[in-house]
Image 1 (cartoon, rainbow, N blue to C red):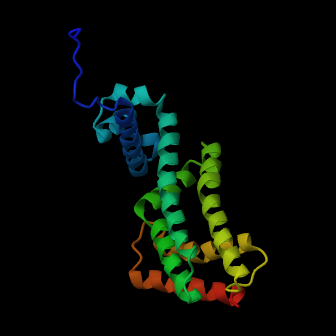
Image 2 (image 1 turned 90 degrees about the vertical axis):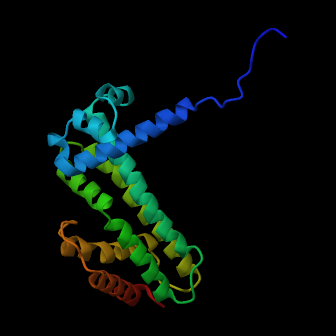
Image 3 (image 1 turned 135 degrees about the vertical axis):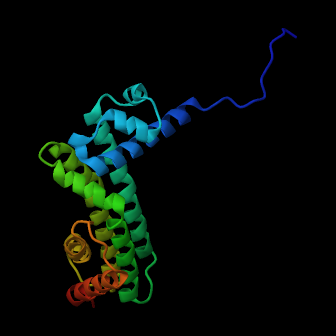
Amino acid sequence: MNGATTSSEPRPNVRRGRVDKRQAILAAAFRVFARTGYDQSCVREIAAEAGVAKPTIYNHLLDKEALFHEAMRAAAHDTFAEALTALDQLRAPEADTYAMLEKVGHHLLRCHCDERSWALRRLLHAEVTRFPSLVEAIHQEGEQRVRHALADRLARLALTGRLRTDDPDMAAEQFLALLTGPMEVRSGLGTRQVPDTETHAVVRAAVETFLRAYGT
């Protein structure tokens, strides 16, 4: 025996803790930016929202602009991940194409119309001239990924004779527009509550119009 002892207690996962704290800071930053806008937000307020000291934020991110970029991209990642999950329902299509598209349409609209998604789009619209590269990055990483994933599912339905299209990407773009376009107007970009009956009507109209163009 050389007198050395080995502790049986697990060592704290420092890296995991740092990742969790960074995520908490980004979530808090997004809430503050969504509430007060980029110009009116300050790092001190974000630190208070996250429950950390102001220097802790600078340990993770360089400045307010970097914080805005990372907070927006984190929020976009979560938002579009939920939309991609909705499209998984098209991997094992049901017998009734209308019912299947209606179910997917409802799920996509729930993702599109939750408060985080509205806040993300309002901030992007407000800051498009200040941060055009951020807007383009989120468009590429989020909206285009969802459209391409939907196009892939629609192409598979066309191959099995369930739909009729030689341009699945265009079909996907039009289906998404039929769903989200009316909700942008009815909700005033998320500033008004849209009754469930109206949301159901929007989804039904979108599916019916889509299948008139692309149904077999």
